[in-house]
Image (cartoon, rainbow, N blue to C red):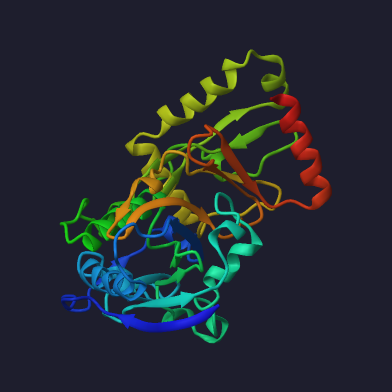
Length: 350
């Protein structure tokens, strides 16, 4: 892998008065970096890698005006020293160009794999030595393969964007590379997700409880600038002895429960309990099947597919399979013996 160029890209216009972005309790549970990579076939037009890289940098410079918080840095809150917020200080993002002699056909591109780590090689150099408050909230690496195909790897702090917001961000970036206007105007104000004063918990919040031996707890989600979990609750016996539609019914009940008061009550629960609990014996299931990331068309061509680089423990991600095969990829991280059992169970079911 060869480093071709590395620059800091700043907003085309300065942010106003170094404004600060409030981060909700849900945002603060996601102050971690996420890596995703998008692939493109070789450009069909006569456009060089240098021209593509320049278009990308110019598009980011324009995009960081409405997304000024992405060019900012995490700082200590002025109201509460135990909280982070984002200062829109125009510190910029990092954009990298790289080349490899390897061909795209040598990579597994429709699911996370250790092989893909190479496509983030220059994004993580020296990262452990940088204080969190000085780290760019977004860094990207554009890699050209020996066959002419491209990979765009993004390394971003998850507190800035959720899945749907990432989709909108990519759609806007693609539009700007085509010299077209924004597709979606972002709204960065998250004060709607601020806890009430005083907090008022009006519902039991089993979505934040530890599952017992007699019940399965899982989540359904509403979406905003952050993830709002709900729950569907049933005993193992109920799930085993009831008809197949029973589980679907319980999930539907969980979705219907997510009204305005329930969400506010959940936010207040997080305020009183100092954040979201983490249970080592639980897992989260995330679906990328309907995000539509592969629908984006950039100046150099249509996006082929997108995938996380790796899957963290206790996380299962559903990804679209290769175009035309109608399948899905189930991505999770398990020890080899457990993966064998999981695969056998899945094949028996289907």
